[in-house]
Length: 342
Ligand code: CP3
Image (cartoon, rainbow, N blue to C red; front, side):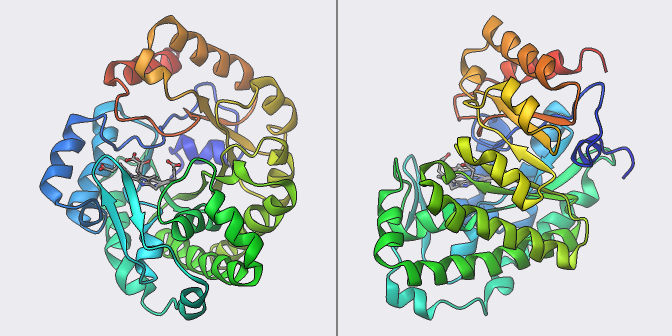
């Protein structure tokens, strides 16, 4: 494990050349992914097939030699394992039956692990096949972000249905968040048991919360998750990604005790270096659209990150997932530029 530079960065080490991986690195921008996706059937079939999920997790490692592999799955397997109906509609994204107050009261975690067993098997298979120097990242969605899909039944631009639900039914919403905290802890623990080297918690919709709601629905649940995971796996390495958290980032880093903070492309590089990097490794934060446009602007953005963050621990990544129209050549261009001194 000593050769896994992504783990070294998570442990606070400053490296000459940073580790690099990309959110959504296994995805539709890769022809080899599209091929397996078509063979697997539904998207959830792909997530629950250890053979296919292992294959697509490894694809970007074979093609680009990233320093980190991220388990191929989805944040919505948790609601599915809690017994909710989850479907992925081609070209439209996820669809769930919006959960009601009564249904929240009846939610139970009793079948959670039996449904998620194939995911743990995928983790073990991937770890077995990965090169020794490649870090394996497990993940889950943060309770707030998962709840936004459970309440609205789909992605929405500003998460208004969920924000409104939390205001109208704070007790029921607290219950839902508590169940998601409990599920996330045991889900991440099982991924670590199965061979994940570190885990990332995606709070993709943290940026729509007012400051008090951020504390209640994003920060507190994350504190509980970090504590709960480390109770079983002391020293577990955890990356938090509260996308759009802006003014709340400093508080999040200080209170949660994450090893690294994922930053989206709106966060100024110098500010992150000055205020966050002294206490935590940074991860990010290239605009994913640069993977479509490429060119000198991409080189400039890569250089800016390297220049700003190289005096401290950091992990090179995008500020959010690569889109299906991202270009393979531009991904290679980014990697070559990062590694030209390695
Ligand atoms: O490569 C990786 O990063 C690992 C796999 C991964 C997926 N989803 C695969 C996926 C990860 C880490 C996720 C996380 C996820 N899923 C998040 C948090 C990160 C983020 O992007 O904000 C969220 C919000 C979801 C929910 C979700 N899943 C949405 C909104 C969609 C539809 C959008 C889209 O790109 O189609 C998905 C589907 C999904 N998850 C795809 C992939 C590769 C595309 C589905 C397909 O191949 O048909």
